[in-house]
Image 1: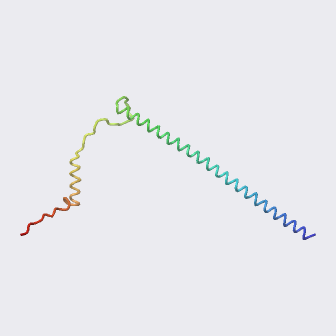
Image 2: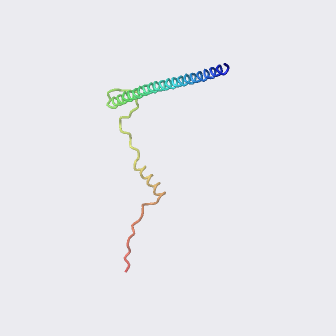
Image 3: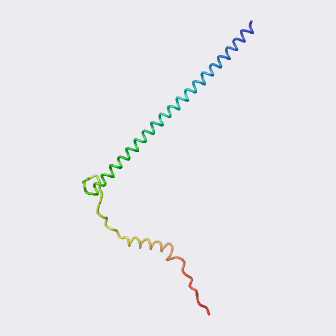
Amino acid sequence: KQWYQRRVAITAGDHMRKVKEKLVSKQLVLERTEKVTKSRKMKKLGKKVQQEVLKKRADEKKQMMDSVKRVRKGKQDDDDFEINTTEPESTNKKGDINRKRKAKDSKYGHGGKKKKVPTATL
């Protein structure tokens, strides 16, 4: 009778261990699925927020460009913009070119490879 009671106790213990493992594995699966669904929802929310931000930026840019066009055409006087519609006075472009040329000449020398003029030897 004792061996039977031990056998029943061991069998019951094995069964309870298997049941417990099964419950733990189900719980882990549930946690994983909840985590995945939560991350999907967050991703969708993030995309939605990003789209709203991009749309807001595009609207602001469009409004800015429209107001700039109006100011340029002279239809609206805005003090917000410091746009000079007249041509800026030209700075001395020739002097800049000459200054650059002088700097390059001092660094590299004048011109490139010289022609080899054949000499007539008789």
